[in-house]
Image 1 (cartoon, rainbow, N blue to C red):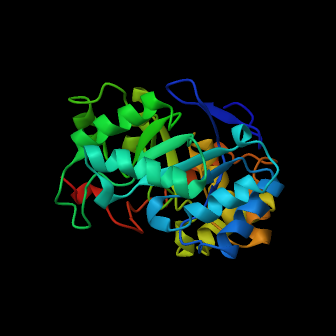
Image 2: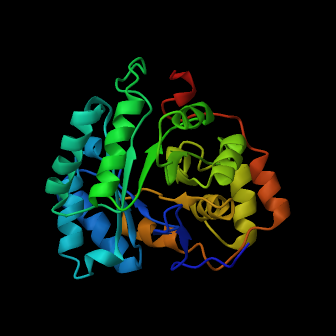
Length: 282
């Protein structure tokens, strides 16, 4: 693989460049908490910030970016369409509402957050929602569009109605949930896979098997897991609201995991979802 650096970017299927490492803001509270996290990330060199309507912190993310002194065009901003906003007309209204909260004229990436329009996964509005997503792309309100938590089946279904295939599929991905088939499918279709919860929501972060390997490189368990996802070719968005951890999570470009250790980490796979499992959504 090519050497990775903090400045590394991946080319999306429409030519847009996306940084390989960013800051996730899930559960970062609106106001000082999320604003400080974004400021610290930007000061540390991050140029990808991921938010969502359902996080309730788009306003703080936008404020921090505006006050950062960094030109808007240098920062890659992602937000997401929530389930209850799915549907053609609703999606068109939702992007405008997100942009208003962000205080921006466009986002770099707009994602359909889940492949269903209700919490039970029983309402399918994927086709009409994607029609709106394509219009949002054409309007310039998003530089790229994609999906989140889509399985291979959902992506295959899209071929029946999509004129533009998603540029990104953001999914839960870590050694305990190595979605190898999905990774290979997306690579074949030119869809970038992006890892949310790359640190297992901290639930498995202290696993001693990870610690043994991390110690070999003089790195923390978190740094090892981030690097593992990067070496699998993913974009990675670890979440933190602590300055020291945000900085630590960025120090993953001065080492490379050996093939043997990559295999050992891969072998931890249990197909264990820490969040909602989208395979149940038809």
